[in-house]
Amino acid sequence: MLEHLEPLCSLYGISGNENRVRDYILSRIEGKCSVRTDNLGNIIAFLKGKKKTDKKVMIAAHMDEVGMMITNINEDGTLSFDTVGGINDDVIAGRQVMIYEKNIQSVVGSKAVHNMTEEERKTPLAVSSLYIDIGAENKEEAEKFISPGDCVTFMSGFARLGGGKVCSKALDDRAGCAVMLDLIDEGVEYDTYFVFTVQEEIGLRGAQTAAFGVSPDFAIVLETTTASDIAGVNGAKKVCELGKGAVVSFMDRRTVYDRELYNLAFSLAEQNGIPCQTKTLIAGGNDAGAIHISGSGVRTAAVSAPCRYLHSPCCVAQYSDIEACEALTRLLITGINEL
Image 1: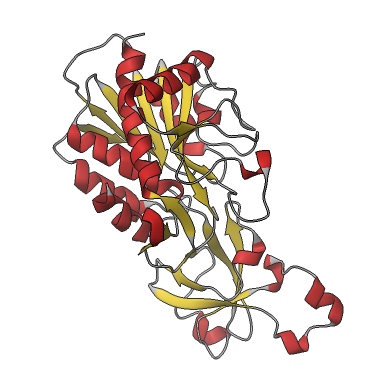
Image 2: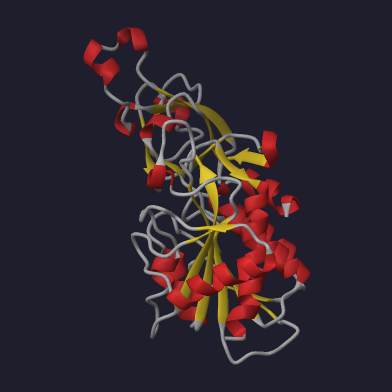
């Protein structure tokens, strides 16, 4: 799976501009399954299994990542921008970023510390006070290269950390995409739809149209989810922990998950020695929020890899947890079809 994970995370693709990620995925699944791309840009792939089924099962993961978009070119040649998706403002300042449609490297700047008032130093930086610096001398020069609406992502390399951990931008949710590519490569027991969605980070938009197009009976959403297992965080506020396996949710801010599928996941994990945990805090949401209420309703489960520092340039996940997500998803595909 690492063969897929590193190149996927290295690709640039904020919500609404996932072209590079989509092209990579299409190149990797060509000839392995029947594929179509819908009007919004979702990839809908149907993989024949060893057995036919009367149940329609859909596995979904989103291709997009959080990022930024240029909104204005300032007189001094710097660029105003806004965020695309939920990013904490304090992880943006001072970062190297890429205006990737134009292949322009740049940096996010802010007011110099020595020019700040005492009150300003105590106040967290807001996006409105930041700017992107491409090195232009003035507005006229910047306009030769940049246009409002240009897409921006963090520049950060893929790194292997100690203890079997990996670090990169966009682990949310290229990890889920990597799992699906691996499942497609290896084949599945029953006929299965694999859907790579767009625009999850700005409102689950791709999942809504994809679920309408596929009309599944069951869905498994593959994701990453917030892990706060760091010093100074105790009890339920840890949410989940790296190294303790796949995370199966019972509820988040968008979905109450199918109870039978929730129990099935833990039963299969226990029977097969797959590490598995649940979230200890009701928070967040994912494509399941749109999928489970589509059509006449879809019985849905979410299987996630715990991840520290989500929506930042340096997300951290445990590789063994992602492997556990893949192993559990494979069993769930079979288990759902044999309910």
